[in-house]
Length: 86
Picture (cartoon, rainbow, N blue to C red):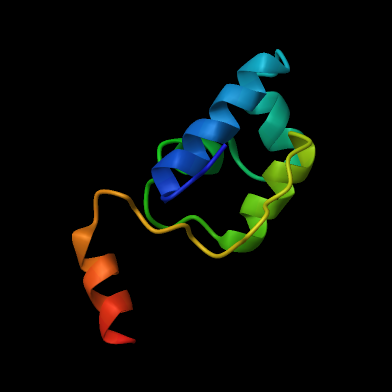
């Protein structure tokens, strides 16, 4: 899944948790975070520590793959700046 935001990543984690049949409390316990923290992560609230995100992703059997972002086909400015050599 292509994620572009904290909302996308939280939604992906929620969907995977539900697909695995795990409750928020079960994931929180296994990742050693509070249930409240997990709720904040799944709903992309501020104050979520990045190192804990990786703990949750590990419990959910997910890996984060970072790559160059493909240009948004709807963002004309990307093409303009590319043409200008910026």
